[in-house]
Amino acid sequence: MFQLKWLWHNLLGDRTRYILALCLSVVGSSLTIINPYLGQRIVDTFITGGDALTNLTDKRGLLIGLCIGMIGFSLLRTGLSYFTTLLYERASQNMLYRIRIYLYNKIQGQDMSYYDRNRTGDLMTKMTGDLDMVRHTMAWIIKTIIESLTVFLAAVVYFFYIDVELTLWLLILSPPIFIVAFLFAKRVRPMYIDLRERLSQLNTTTQENIAGNRVVKAFAREEYEVQKFTEKNVHYASANKAAAMVWLDYFPYLETLAQAFNVILMIVGGLLVMDDRITFGEFSAFTALIWGLSNPMRNIGIIINDIQRFFASLNKIVDIYYSHPGIVNEHKPIVKRRYQGRIEFDRVSFKYNNAMVLENISFAINPGETIAIMGATGSGKTTLINLIPRFYDVTQGRVLIDGTDVRKLELDELRGNIGVATQDVLLFSDTIDGNVAYGNPDLSEEEVMKFARLAAANDFIRKMPEGYDTIIGERGVGLSGGQKQRIALARALAVQPPILILDDTTSAVDLETEEHIQKSLRELEFDCTKIIIAQRVSTTASADRILILDNGRVIEDGTHAELLAKKGYYYEVFMLQNEGIGRQATAHGQK
Image 1 (tube, rainbow, N blue to C red):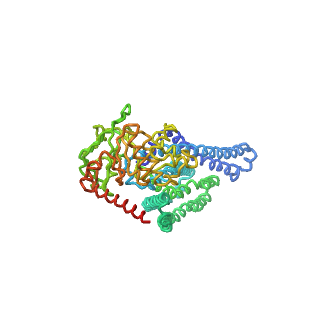
Image 2: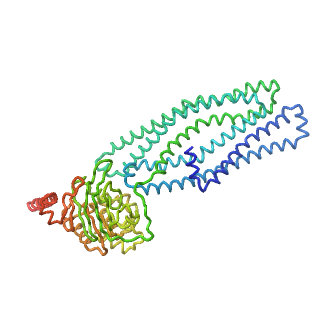
Image 3: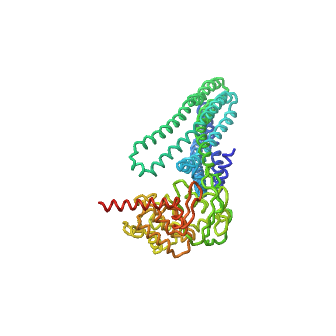
């Protein structure tokens, strides 16, 4: 079975410990027949036998030995059970640790399209609840199966040794119990698959609401979000109750059949005792060990319940475990080199979900040049720059850096040569110093401050309670949009990349700050090819070249003056923005 092979594969390093635990479970469970046997000897020899009174006097040492034996074996079984549980827990926790690390590395290694397809809440559920279900299976479910099966077989063998007929009468209940268990398993399995999906949806809703709490409050949509969460919660609770009710549908049958063992024992066993077919001691042994038949049968429902949960969880984990990114490292350089910074798009086209986003784009950027990209929303600007560090791969054509197709470059080297400040700024729950130095943790404090000054961030950072040691909240909570953009820019500059990509990173700063940033970018101490996505003409005017995208195509290409002379899209944007500034100035003067 695939699931068991998968578990065995991931037990590497703890297989000996786990096998020892399984063996000790078998040994400990087998010892359950010892005390009933000793009890049988005591009853037949010292209580009901014809020589019982004589034996109490003459064989007192045997009685004491049997009693001590019962106590000793009880303590032995308790000690084995404790030690076995420790082994199971150690092996399962170690396995859980290794799988979680492996899955996290898998998720980290996925390309951007993987994150487009998978919800954050679903991934979180796989990394937490689903993994814990796997650990629970290794530590408890398999242990319960082994121990229940061993106790059942040991009891059956011992019962056959005492009396075959009575044992057969007892076993007559086994087939109907297995039929009921089979029907339960068949019915409940799809319900747990649905239950697992509803849990994922609940976690996704929770994660999105917490991450977007500022937007929720800004639009006063708390009540709507509470209702949405309540709806998901009701769906999950309903599925949980439905699965539980299925168990309750079958539980009376399993419990009744399990209790019927005692009824058969009392009726058939009593008749056999009256017919002198078995002794009182043997009947007491049956009575003492009848739970060895009834309990495993009673546990079947619980085991099946947990096994179905395990299958539902494991199927989700396997999705990550065996996933393979489409963009992978194929070349491992011995020494990572610094690129010159020449970029070329050679007849590049890109489709996303069969929708054409970029079509037949060709242009080149020489080392040290500054290229600005403008275009309407949805024209493909961000997609275009995402092809350079291979966040996505082209559908057709080539993206080349220093004359080499990026698909032939080692990913870590490629991305290590590119500094990126994205449109959606993400800052970590760390100090400002830690965020700026994220790409190069070896930066000194003076260097961090230097790059912060280049990004016009030093002044507001120094005014914060603990300066560069101020811990900012998750995703930069507590900072303005412009402050977050400047820290993100400082982070991109701090790696001193030969290629710098800025995706609308000055949209939230004032014109004076933008001018400072533009001056800093022009006077960088290291050679750098810069690609800047912007909507302000004040940002693009000083670029060496400006590309205008429209519906995934380059419709204009030239300098600021050349594009104004063409009187196309760029000219229209320039006039709109300058007329807007003029109107604002006129209105201000009239006041």
